[in-house]
Figure (cartoon, rainbow, N blue to C red):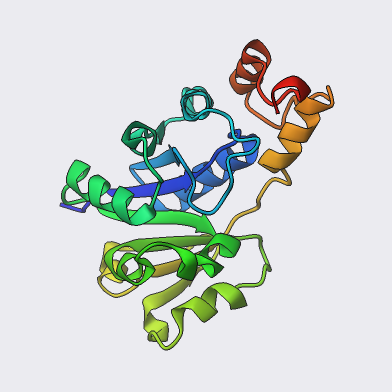
Length: 222
């Protein structure tokens, strides 16, 4: 029986926006994942906390964003830990929660290019599969540099319409995937909210309602 494929899509999600959901759906469909878990960090190790909404609010917004998206789910694993959110710790917990599943970290090329700054990154590179997203035609050089002298056979650029077979995963560990990313960022959403500009379309409607009702990212609360 084929092993379930689970995507681990972490981030601050400050706030989650339509681009995150679009990317998660694209990865789910292209790689035939049973589920993509969006995992808000509790305390991100590489970012400050200025302008960072409370973890429970960010988790609540992710739950709202994926509520009507089959195959996408919110995970509270890092928020409930109430500690600095290190991917290596999250991976250990997910292995225990999903025994027998194939676990894939999902991230963009920019984030992967900085993985050498992550805690125990060498262990992570060996213990998990990776989906590295880029815009069509985007540069992958920095992401590939991280892989150093690892054999080219460990990498696969998944072209349009190509499937990733279970047999491929006996050796492939790094999957490069083009995703038509939406031109949206969390910082742009926060700036729009602070300045009273509309954010319809930038975030799912339920997230827009949550931001309004909880008064997040307004000028008077940072």
